[in-house]
Image (cartoon, rainbow over all chains, first blue to last red):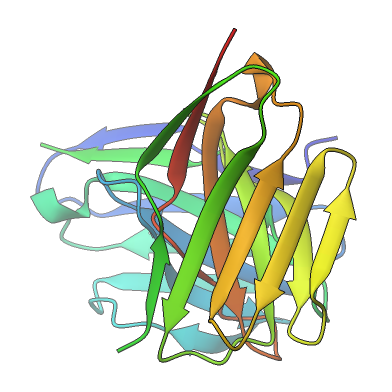
Length: 112
Length: 112
C-alpha cells in the first residue's frame, strides 16, 4: 500500500555510466516531481510533470531526462554520470490545488 | 534572486518546552507555505499548509503563522517530546502548486 515508491533505494555506479530511477504513485495524483537533496540536505526541484506533460524544468543538465509514460509513473534517466550527481533523489506527487506533496523514500545515488 | 532561509541549522530544547522555528523569504510572493518533517534516511512528510490570506493554522500540538508583510512563517511545537526530534523544512509555492521550493531545514533535537 505504498503511496509513492521509488526503485532502487541505493545505486552505486561508476562515472560515465547511464542509470535510471523509477517512480510510481498509487494516489491518483495529477502532478509528479523529481527533487535532488545534496550532501548539505538542501532539497531542490528538478522537474515537475502534470498529467504526463513537463511543466517545470529547472536548470538541470540535459544528461537528466525525465519520462512519464502515464500519470502514475515518472522515471528519471541520467546519462554519463558524474561525481557531482551523487545525492539522494526524491520523487513526489500532489493532487491539483494547494495540497501537500507526498514523497517517496528516496534513491541514494553514489557515483564513484 | 529568491531566497528561503530557516533561522538556524540546529535547535536544541528540553522536553515539554515549545519549539519555535523560523522561515524567512525574500524576492518571493508565495500563494502558500508548507511545513514538512524529515527523519534521517526518509522522505519529507507533509505537516501543515497555510495560505497567503491566512494568519494562523493549528493541528494538534503544531501551530503555524504566516506574515506576508514580514515575509516570515513561524512553526511552533508545543509540549515537545523526544519523538519530535527531526529536521523541519519550510516550503513555498505558487498558485499552481507545481513548483514548491524548500528551505535548508532546521534540525530539532528535544532532550528528555
